[in-house]
Amino acid sequence: MIKETLIYQGDSKWSRNAYIKFVGDKIVFDCSDGEYGPIEFDIQAFYEAELKHAHDIPNEVDDLEGEAEMSGVEEEWETIYPTDKEDACDWTLVREKDGLTKQSKNIKWIEWDERGLFEADHEVIGIGRSLIMSPFNQYFTWQTSVITEILEEKEHYIKFKTLNSTYELFKLV
Image (cartoon, rainbow, N blue to C red; front, side, top):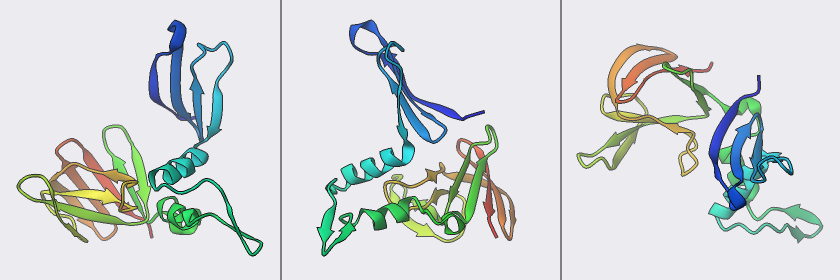
């Protein structure tokens, strides 16, 4: 079964239905109420375009002495979405209630001040901290709410509760 995640569903012009959703490794869009069929494109193409848009990176390719280079986007892309599968993920987080699974290369534990603003990041779990999964910028993989209880802690495994959920975190070895 191919996984689907709805992003938007609603009305478009002339009382037609519209939707956009993730389907497998594609983004599927239709605003013609099915009359013309959906438009599909690769999720990676979307992520690359969003990254360029967010960082004001030009779309054109610069040709320097016969070598094509993309104005620094490859380096940024690799930090956000590693293509070397062996280096891509060292951590797996699973939410207990629905099995939601997130993976990342690194993690940090975020400490908040009394106003709920960032105070510090840590290498170890603690009550009152939140887990954030790399990359550590606006494209972070996942962030939990504040940890309320540490249920179990082993060398490569932590089970903990937050304000909203119970999670299991695995260090892949």
